[in-house]
Image 1 (cartoon, rainbow, N blue to C red):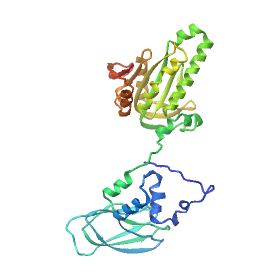
Image 2: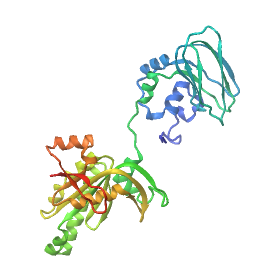
Image 3: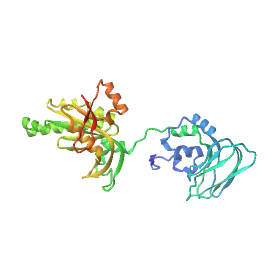
Image 4: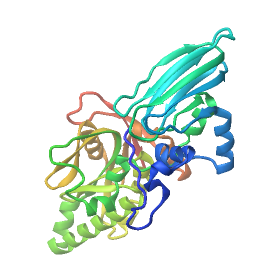
Length: 353
C-alpha cells in the first residue's frame, strides 16, 4: 500500500513535525509513522492504551547502546523502531522460566531486519544498539488485539479511483492525470453509458440548429448530474455519454435523475446502461480514458435499453447500497438473461423501469 499524506509548508507556519528529531516518541508515532490516516482516540484514551500494550520504550542517540531487563509475559511481542523501521517479533510461549534469557537487537540505516524469535515467559534482557546516524525510538509492544484494534481504525481517505472519477479533477488536469505510456489497473469501477432515443428523427423534425442546441443542453444537464453523484464524464460519442462512478449506487442515483433531460424537451428520452468491474485507465487523445471488457459490456448493456429504460448487470443491482437505493425509491428491478453482441457468455441483466 502506498499512502500519501500532506501537511502544512514551513513557508506558511512552522510545526514540530518539521523537525522530527525533536518529537517525543509517542508524538513521532502519532504525527509521522501512523500519520493522519489512523483514526486515533483522544489523548487520555490513547495514553491508557499505549500504557497497556507497551513493555518499554527508549530513546537511543547515534552509536548509543542500552540493555533493558524485562519480565516478559506469554504473548506475541514486537520490538519496533519507527525511525529506521527495524523490527523483531518475539513469540513468548511455553513453560515459564526463571533463567535469564537474552536477545540482541542492532539498528542500522541500510538494513531493516525482521523475523521471529521464540522465548519463554520470564526474565529477558534485551540489548539495543543504534548504529545509524539518526536518533532511534525503539519500543517493546504486546502485538495483541488491543494494538490491532488501535491501528485498524482508518480515517476516510481519497483513493486514486475516487480522484480519477472526480469531474473537477478531470476538468482541471485533463492531460496530466496519467503519462501517455502509463496504464493503471483499477480493480473496480462503475461505468454508465447513455444514448438519446430518436436523435436522428429529432434533427429531421426540428432542424439542425434547434436539435444541436437541445443535444448540447442535454450534455450540460448530464454533466451536472454525474458530478453531483461524485462521478465524472469520460467522453461524448455523438449524442451518447460515457461516465464513471466509484460505486454502483452513485451510478444508479445518477440514472434515476433521467427525467431532468426529458424536462428539456418531451421528445428527449435517455437509454442507459450500467456495469461494474475491473478496467485499465490510460491517456488517449489528450484525455484520460478507460479500456477493458468491463467497458465493452457496459456499452453493450446500454444497447439493450429501450426508451427511458435503465439496464444494469447483476454486479450493479446486487451492490448493497445500490439495492437499498432502489428499495428506498420503491423500484423493483426485473431480471432477464440476455446475449450481448460480441460477448460469448449470456448475462443476467436487470431492467429498472
